[in-house]
Length: 59
Image 1: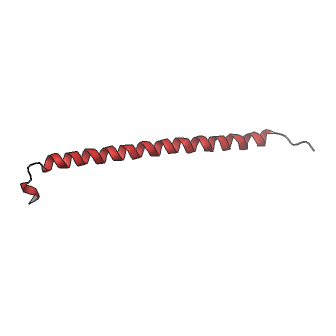
Image 2: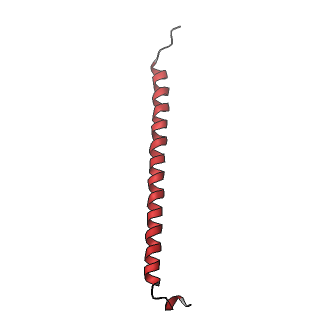
Image 3: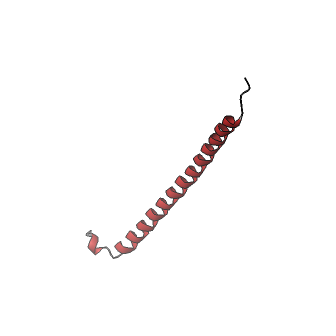
């Protein structure tokens, strides 16, 4: 069948585009959550490192 003869082609393409858009948004959301999580971990390391710099070492 020729794609130009398929009367439902536009609907099928719109459905596919919607699904791809949803997938991209889901991937973006997961990526942002991971970035936020990694940022929190980095902040904890940064805070721990900075707290050890503030402690004076008695000689």
